[in-house]
Image 1 (tube, protein in one colour):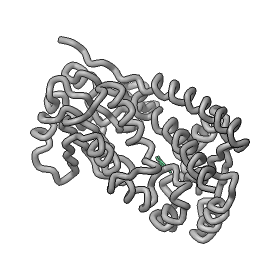
Image 2 (cartoon, rainbow, N blue to C red):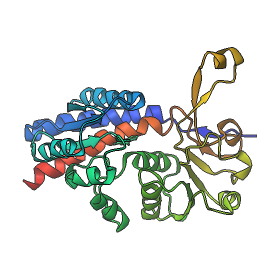
Image 3 (tube, rainbow, N blue to C red):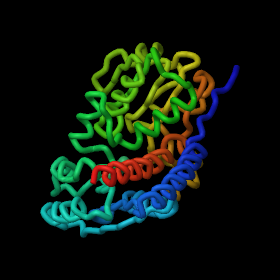
Length: 297
Ligand code: GUN
C-alpha cells in the first residue's frame, strides 16, 4: 500500500513568507512606504492572545509595520467602531484585522462592516464576500486562500475535479467553495443536515474538511487517491493516562489522519498543514492591500 504525500504547509508558508519579505523590500524601494497592518484585540481570550502575538511577530519579520491595539474586555461597541474609523483614515495603515471572536456584547457583523473593504485583509467584509461570489475577488479570506495554494501546488490544475467542502462557515467553508468553483471544480458543500455525506465523499477528488470535530472524516469515506485538506484545529486530551490526568492535550484535525493517509494520494497534517498558511496569506493580503491603496491615490 502506498502512503499519501504529506503536504508540508510549514515549509510552503515559510517559502511564501520569504517571497513576501522580498515583495515588501521592493515595495518600500519603489514607493518609500512601509506596508502597515493594524491588529485589534478586544479582551483577554488566551487563544486569541497567542494568535495575535504570532500575527504581529510575523508581520515585523517580513519587514512590515505592525500596529497593535488592545481594548478592555468590556470596551463598548462604539469605542471599537471609533478605533476602526481612525484606522480606516490612517494612511500608515493598509490592513486592519479585528481578532475574532469578539465579546458577546459586541455585534460582529457591525464591526466587520465598519472596516474599509480596501483594508479588510481578512476578506470578511460583505463587499469582499460579494466580490468573491461574483468572481471578481479582491481580498480573499486567508485560510481558504492558503488551502487553494496547497491544492494547486499538489495537483496543478483543479479543472473538472469533484470537490467536497465539509462545513459552511463564512470564514472557511463558503469562501473555500467559491474559490474551488472559480478554479473550475464541480463543488459540493456539505453541512450538519447533509444526508449522504459518505457517498458524497466517496465521489470527491478533493475533500476539504472544516467542521471542527476531531477525526470526523473516516478513511473508509475517501475515494482512493483523493487529495485531503484538513482545516480542523481541535484540542483533545492525550491518550497516555498519566499525561491525561495531568490535563495534557494535543491538537488534531477533522480527519482521521493515520488511516486516511493510507487511502489518499496527498493529505495535510495537523498541525503543520493548513494552519501555518493562514498567517502567510494574511501578510500576502496586506501587501496586496498596500499596493491597491497606494496605486489608487
Ligand atoms: N479568529 C480565528 N481565526 C481568525 C481569522 O482568520 N481572522 C480573525 N480576524 N479572527 C480569527
